[in-house]
Amino acid sequence: MPIGEDAVAGYSFKIEIDGVTIAQFKEVEGLSTEIQVIEHRENTPGGLPVIKKLPGAVKWSDITLKRGKTDDTSFWDWLRQVENGDVDGARKNGSVVLFDYARGEVARFNFENGWPSKVNVGALSAAGNDILVEECTIVHEGLKVG
Image (cartoon, rainbow, N blue to C red):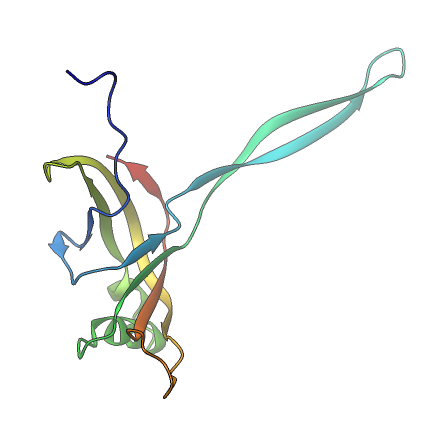
């Protein structure tokens, strides 16, 4: 009988955009939320300085997806939609879904109104022996654990 709960492995996940599972990914970064801090300085009636730390605006990190480059141009097409001025049409909701060892869903990070701000193909090298990696940075307007 196991003692406690097993931690979730970082290798078993999938990406959904508008409810559709897309491609295979090698890496995901940027699943974080931060509350900015407001430092409010004031003095007591006796003249002693006091610093109060208060919660400020919420900030979400950009999400970066990395995958082996294939002939799939969906990231480039999505970026082109933004370049052509159709930002509203390019905004999509998505999820990063984590699985346990039995492939059951254990967590879901949902982002809202995401669109690609950058698509990049890694370095090319005639002397290399690596897979070419495509990277897409998605900016968004909210991240929630669902």
